[in-house]
Amino acid sequence: MENDLIKARLLYYSFFKTLFLYEELSLEPKDDFKDLVLILKDSPFDENLKESLERVSLEIYENGFVNILSEYQKLFFEPNGASLGFTASFYNEGYEAGTMLVRTKDILNQSLIRKDSEKFPDNEDHFGFLFTMMGHFLEIELDSNEQSCKYKELSKSLFSEVINGTVEPFIEAIVNSVDSRLYKDIATILFGFINFERFFYDIKATEVKNTLKAESINEKYYKKRKKQKQK
Image (cartoon, rainbow, N blue to C red; front, side, top):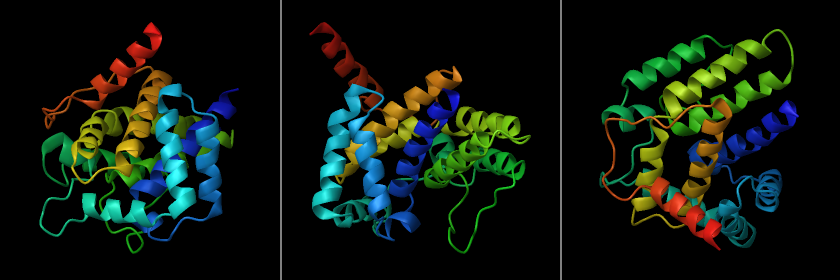
């Protein structure tokens, strides 16, 4: 049962890794990723995410990844300086290479996993890389060897100390961007999954310094859930 849950979580981390790493997305993910999206769409862990998963799946099957990549570039690579931040440090302190990067490196150094700087030049607290790390840690947990307990602790540390307190303003920034359409759905799916991970690790959302003023996706998400329960 526990291994089945880890495998399901791995699918989501693979989904987010691909959609938040330019190095992955620009390679034009192939049929295995399309199959992964279908699995998530057909068996969502939360019915509130079904519509978003269906729209993302439909986009990929009708248009491939052209529109997703184009939107990604508008959101994160705008040459006029309007691009969104992409690191935990930015959403924790308002600038790059802060304490979240230090903590991420500390956790990474306790593992056997290392970043290939030639393939991935960004900092380790880039959310795409954080999702990649979580996936690798979960894969080792599945091996059920002497390293499993260690990596179980590392994955919990990475999520609770780095991702948990910084990912929500990152999600809000995407949702509130005028350039966001497809990534609104992707961000909604991410938010639902983050809440699932909080439940799994039995931790609460933590506030960060660089919070956004607009209505949070957290409020929108629970308003939708409340309406569904009232039907």
